[in-house]
Length: 168
Image (cartoon, rainbow, N blue to C red; front, side, top):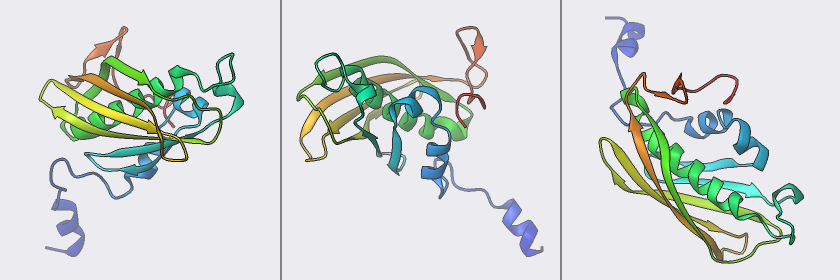
């Protein structure tokens, strides 16, 4: 057996993320995540971390970061975490419930969100996340319940899959 065919025959263990996981996540952000400036800084199957620089486009009328930014960060990280854990099975994950609590107002700096799983079942996951300001103060917490979809599942009339025009 040649070295080339030996490498071809070896398959990574199930649920092993690729070495370039951060590059993959950051290159498939797409639409809303790009609009709010989100980028991943850490990614494993049980912990994701991402940041969003606070800009004027993220403010509500009082000059504070809009609560939807926190909810979106939490949803994005929890959904990405669940998806990473089922992708190798040909499945996908979609959020079906997001509960976000706003704890402290922010006007500037960089927001950092960290997400970890609470339950990773066959048909649903529950992930929790926290958002901190650039001084390390907790500004929001959230929990997202996700439905795990079988390969070929549809939502809103189309197959659920990474769309080239929406994610890099």
